[in-house]
Amino acid sequence: MSLNTVAINQRMDKFDGHASVWLFGYGSLIFKADFPFIERRPASITGWTRRFWQGSHDHRGTASAPGRVVTLAPEPGAVCHGMAYLVTPEEFAHLDYREKNGYLRLATDIRFEDGSSIEGLVYIATHENAAYLGPASERDIALQIARARGPSGPNSEYLLELAKALRELGKFDAHVAEIEKHLLAFQAEA
View 1: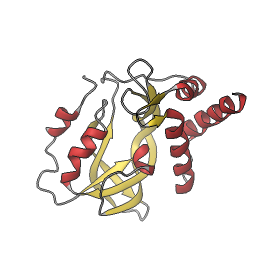
View 2 (view 1 turned 60 degrees about the vertical axis):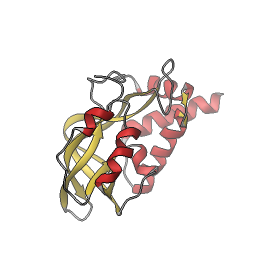
View 3 (view 1 turned 180 degrees about the horizontal axis):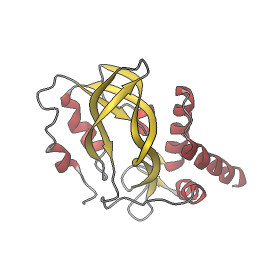
View 4 (view 1 turned 45 degrees about the horizontal axis):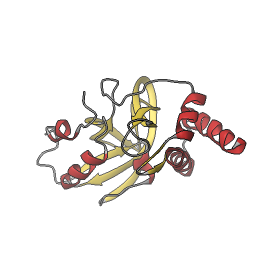
């Protein structure tokens, strides 16, 4: 699959005709909502785990030195915590462009903290996209993040903002925390 997924996402018609749709964010969408939204609520999805396995060639890295950003990997029984936004379908054009580096819009059940749930959408970069980097040790991921920088700034900023946002939500993510620990150790040595 191409690095640019805008055209693929524009063909998703599941929510056509809806006045609003819930969008689940689990990475930068938790701490950087650069789009208008009607409502914002902490939420989670099940069966997925957050992983720094997606390359960022357009935001937090470059084509020659990609950064690493999060995507979701399937994991039975896992719960991924994040933030849900109620948006109008007019926001899809902006979101498709923002998530164009390998992410696909998928329908998912979103659960809110009050126990209610609704079908919404999430952007996931699968192993089939050209920017997918795949698994690595948390130390190696942190080293790559420490070195990467792109048009949206240093990759380390993305990791640190995500870790901070998860703490503010009161949600622990062992993968993110371990990478953050290694990154902070690298920064202290520099």
